[in-house]
Length: 350
Image (cartoon, rainbow, N blue to C red):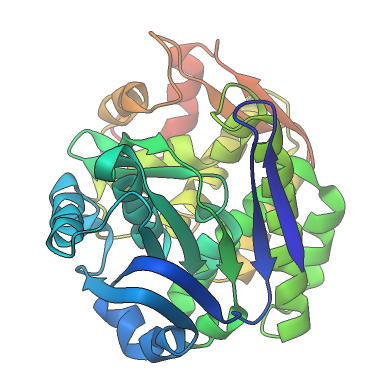
């Protein structure tokens, strides 16, 4: 199955997302594969058997969100210089969202921009992170605050790579699937309520439906000026959870799941979402073994972290909230006392 990305409204860029067995790939140029030890140990031989290139190198970077930094990007750049890549050379991101984000960002920087392709190996990166051209790294102020919109030349999604995924990593990807359904497609949400994602056919359908929704959004709004911001449902809260826990306690998808529960509580407070609907989203997240509880230590500090988020503007925080299941609303004029009232549902001193 092929899902096209057609960014005709901005740059007239087009590329395909292929959901199928990874094909044989031939490149008449130098190619550098960026991966981590975990992915390399399981799947690098499979990838190498599917690629032929004028010159092929592998760069392995440490595994984990803690290494999604400018220092790691500089190390990848140094490898590119060591191998004398030119502007016709290609990078391949072979891993999860961290690898994809850093590889894409590196590609955008090297000699002012070279091509890269995405071969995502986690469910989260297959349904979300690899699609749409967001690249970047974290710093002490927050997540993905340094980066660029830089589109890949192609994305290849092969569910073979998911077979070695730990259960937590798989569940983290499901969080992004649930996000898409709650925001855009009630029928999809109801499909997930009954879905057994351990069945290959059902899993491929879920991936395809998520990718199609993501492509539909990105094709309308590449640089998040409008509807693409809706994809940040759960992320405004979730990014603060990640930052508070130093990116070590929760996987990204787990933090997003907690963030969705928090966003839903705010939507209930604003009468956009019924308590029953909020509980149905929570139940779906828990069905897939995702965390839905979090204890906020300092309400004021948690609230202040919202202003470091990329989606905030000036002194206004933009919240992406469900307006019923299958619809959304972007709200940026919520009184601080209302937000803090909701945050108190998740702990903190009075």
